[in-house]
Length: 340
Image 1 (tube, helix red, strand yellow):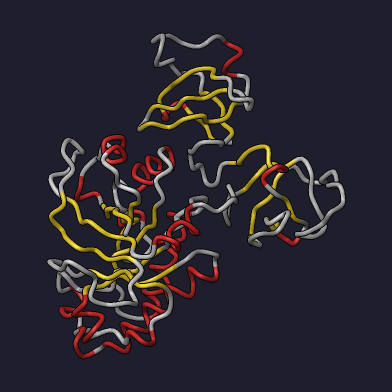
Image 2 (cartoon, helix red, strand yellow):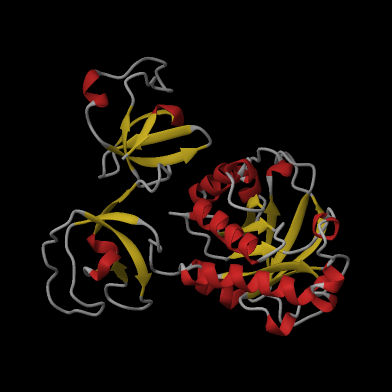
């Protein structure tokens, strides 16, 4: 089994280099909680996703649910979709349907009396995420799976919490949260929820895909194909960039572009266009005129502010940028970056 952690802003600002060096192979990151309001975004979710992407740590995300009806469930799915747009949560997007703070019970939805409704809410979330092209599933403790949720009716994959066992007691869980008392010295958090990814072959198939890009990415490309397995030379595109809306695994040109205008592959793609100002490696950027070089502590030469660059590396608020051929130009604070 493969060992990982799940985290939220309750863990504080983490040192992911140390976490990575301690042999943590994956992470599940809280994206937020409840309906689709920015004030309910997890305060560390962007940083945690950036760091996992920088260090190539496979990750998934979850929303802690407060839904009381189907409209709430739809909104929680939209909450997740907003926060992962342009991201690659390859391990899945999960809804945590527990009631650990008693909110549902206090608002007339006693879990023990409303398992069918809670199951329906989970399935609404999973379907909406699946329709958008993401793997999706449900997190709960074993009591919930056994006594509240209609486990046989749940769609998607299952992430099970049960602590104090030497082995996972069920064969239907994909991820097993086995303790809440894990420690990683000097990581920035006193303790962690620890998890095992149970099926190693499945983990490898998810994390070692040959496709570098994912659904929702807006990419620049220099040629395009009329079919996913075309053997002809690529055509010169009419448009310079487009959004990937579907991926055909094991195809020569697996990425289908929005409005069905054609298919492309990794070799066609020359860069990533910023999705709603998401800053990540490969994104094209400009440097604001107020920017200071973190290496020299001085302003850049004038031409630097006039050119476009790509992000080469992200480490916290430090952004290393340069030319598309990989040559580094400088490093500055993320506040000085304008995503194109």
